[in-house]
Image 1 (tube, rainbow over the protein chains, first blue to last red):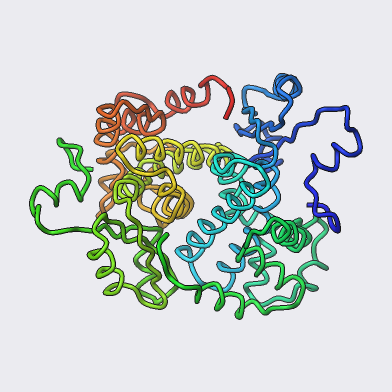
Image 2 (cartoon, rainbow over the protein chains, first blue to last red):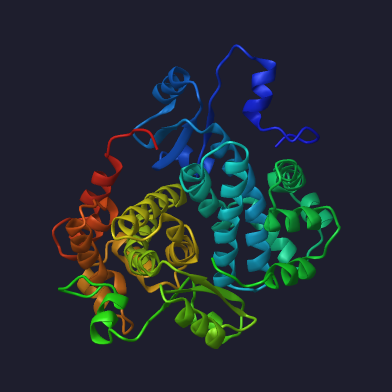
Length: 222
Length: 222
């Protein structure tokens, strides 16, 4: 999600190259595993059927399985928002709250993704697929995920400045959280988990306060 | 899923105690974490609103958060089928296929759960909630899950007899897989992952053959 404008990648490309149809490639993929030739699946999402078919034919291999999807909005929301949920999941584990709490948080996180995708014109089914749930699963469980490990360190009580100073790779969710929340607010959607992460990375809320707030939300029907 | 009859728990209870409304308690919960007082969330699912409210009021605590749900079919399918998908997820990791492959498999596994729940009269939303996705996430990622660790050992090449002889706790998915597949077939639903697990535990298919078969399914739109 672009800083300042809160646009998704294909929205930016459509402005820069209006005549050129574009697709997005996204899914639950650690690059190192793909490079080793291990099996993986991902999505090519775009509204232009011919461009999508061309991308599929060009990039798919027997090990790298690609599925077409005509909902680029849902696919992009999943790819961006999962980094934010992963920070929260890491913080839950880092703070010692356990795997039950993480599973509950990620489930609510997926519901947030679905609400936002729908409000922006995407489909909730996309969010239950490879680019949403699949990517969330990968990013929220493996310490190999940069966003999860960032949250983990936060949960263990390290300061954000310390954690970021020690890493060379980009921790996307740190920049994405505030932009995602701004985009959601403009669309009239509430994202409690992303808002908590945005408030933490912007120094407006401490991690213990954020957790107390999420855990004290009223209990109601699912 | 009951052996032989392929019924879900509330279907059995309705026959034994037709006048007594029942609910099901299910969700992403390792019992040991709940016993330690760590935060957790679960679902009370039942069609009888008053019984559901009574169960909620009796069992909920500030740490053990309970959500009502009027779709007991979806909740029971999630609770049963997740054990079967967890065996497959463990096998993928045990065989060294990596986290990308597991994420793809679990995503397809959730789609199987949703198809079956819908065919039996449940709601796909339930399967995206705590009793489906949440429980799947917990069961398919932690070696603390008996079903996942069973699949892990299978994937590492140990025989089923050896693995089961070494454990005292029940590995639910081993018995559930064939019963779940039978119930799904009676409802006209195909479950490729559960069918592969059932064939493996019944000795009708080897693990490498099952993986080849799942990975060679035709690539198409998501």
